[in-house]
Amino acid sequence: MSSRTINRRTVLRGIGSGLGLPLLELMQSPSAFASNRLPDRPLRTAFVFVPNGVILDAWRPTGEGRHFQFGATMESLKDFHDDVTIFTGLAQHHARSNGDGPGDHARNAGAFLTGAQPRKTSGANIRVGQSIDQAMVASIGSATRLPSLELGIERGRNAGSCDSGYSCAYSNSISWKTASTPMAKEVHPRLAFNRLFGIRDNSAEQKLRDITRSSVLDFVSDDARRLLKKVSDRDRAKLDEYFTSVREVEKSIERAAEFVPPDVPEMELPEDLPGEYQAHARLMYEIQVLAFQTDSTRISSFMLGNAGSNHTFPDVDVRDGHHSLSHHQDDAEKIELIRRVDRYHMEQFAWFLGRMRSVTEGDGTLLDNSMILYGSAISDGNRHNHDDLPIILAGKAGGTIDTGRHVKFDSETPLNNLFLAISDRMGADLTELGDSTGVLPLS
Image 1 (tube, rainbow, N blue to C red):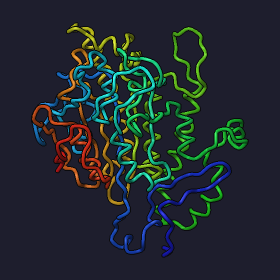
Image 2 (cartoon, one colour; image 1 turned 135 degrees about the horizontal axis):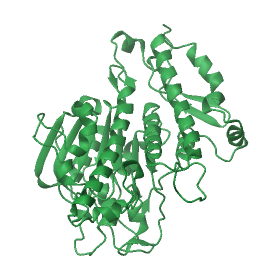
Image 3 (tube, rainbow, N blue to C red; image 1 turned 120 degrees about the vertical axis):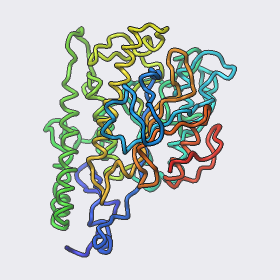
Image 4 (tube, rainbow, N blue to C red; image 1 turned 90 degrees about the vertical axis):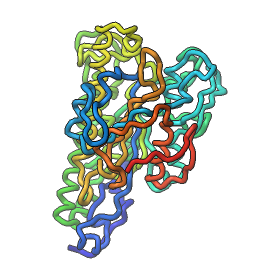
């Protein structure tokens, strides 16, 4: 094996494109090979937001500590028992009205990652707080080409009122750069993919790609060939797996752009926005896998729906709106439909964890070196409760989290304490967030 190494930030260059690389042996010193250890394994964090709360009876695990059993909603996570930590007892106090009246869904999204009370306004004077992801970006975002990645499923405007006098900016954003500046999320898989790999959408080269259906891999092929001459057999296998994943995403985006849902009136559909929820969600999850795998960014957020989303889910025979059903008033039939939606969301999340776990990094996996938080600042969508939140943290954060447990905290333990624990592991200089009272113990 050659003793030469390449920089961790190496990017394959081509016409109008740049392709980041996964962690390779060639990026490490010879001493790292000798010990079969790859020390340069950065941690990654993703925040996945689910709207409208859940049916808690089906969500809650039974048992505590390592001897817990998943609730019916989380059955798809059974294969990830040792990779996740389930928390109960956490609360987000500033998602409550606290004298501001109705608008719990807008406050759910606005307060979820900020831990701050959204100012009730539908005008330009919005104010909530800096979110935990962007607080970490301020400390460590310069380490990667993209400081963070913000994704979503549903479009949303940032002007006007979307929930009882609250600006739409609160309902449609969980990531806030400052107290008054929400981060725009990308809902188009192709545009998110292009941003990730530095493809210039309006360039002549991009237009040529669209016409010829060329892959980004075609445009960096010369650099790729030179790299393959330098690497070990293990690196070559890893690169082959990675290039295959990139091409599969491209193919999926092309297929999704052509998908037309059955049994709907003829209507104009965006060329690059999937018409089927699962395809859309999995593409956005896959883009996050590629972003983390290439160390293009270490921080992402993903909204499975805007706050108060009334999306339907015909895949699981739920044709009424999600938000409407969440106000079930203890109607058994509506509760069962919400359970289906909860399970459906969890199945997509399990798929994401599976993809993260399938990517090897040294003697571990991409999931081992990540923290993937799934949850909401609403627990019961019918009662609009903001305590006992449905929170999952997947990944071991490089071995610093004692996973495979259900951890019950005292009622009203701030969710923001968990965010401080995450930021601490990410190396961010953050001592408080919202109503935090300290760092939540994770080991």
